[in-house]
Image (cartoon, rainbow, N blue to C red; front, side, top):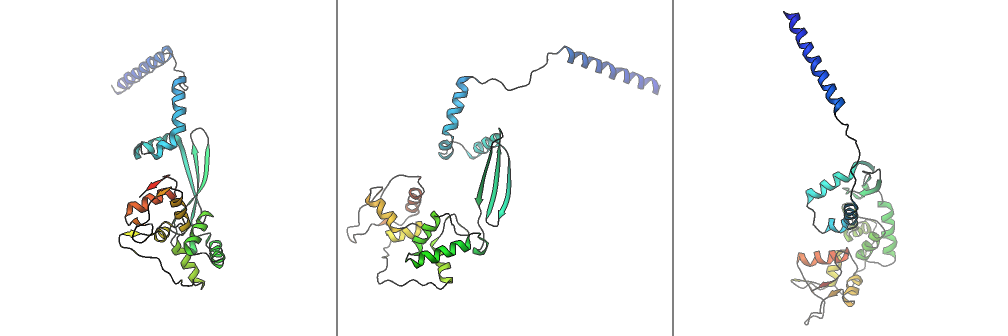
Length: 244
């Protein structure tokens, strides 16, 4: 009885195999490949690709849509820590294109910053030329330096390094005014890590529209977070003109 049952099951399995082979032989094969894209659709994708940088930063795409788009475009990402304050990235795109760049990462101390010695020498050299901390910070940022925890060089970093090497600034007789509820040009320059000339130049050119205060004769800005944010966007090239 056992042998007969095993024989029956084997015969049934063989029949199913023959049926599957027959079906496979009579079914037309499906040609693999990429479907043709119409010229209109290709042109639409090309136009979208040219506008993608603007669309990406205009908030048209949600965070989830951005991630989905990147997953469609990127094959893999290889990250290597080339230095204590820098990551080397290689992005392998679909289509065998590769992008390589270095990404600065924050570090906890100046000693962990790979350009600390070179930045220190530049600070001492610029200080010897008579430049103030804020101006030195702007100059160093333009040269590619940065503070350990930031994306740019902060005046406080310049001051720390300067004092560590015993370089003292001479105290001037005049001091910036402090007016309640308002920010003066020197105060804004310190907050934005730019020179006073940078602000005055844009005020005189009409890029920053503001009238002097009638009582003090100073250019006074409202001491509000929105004021600093707008000026940061102007500094970073996001905005082209401001009116206060």
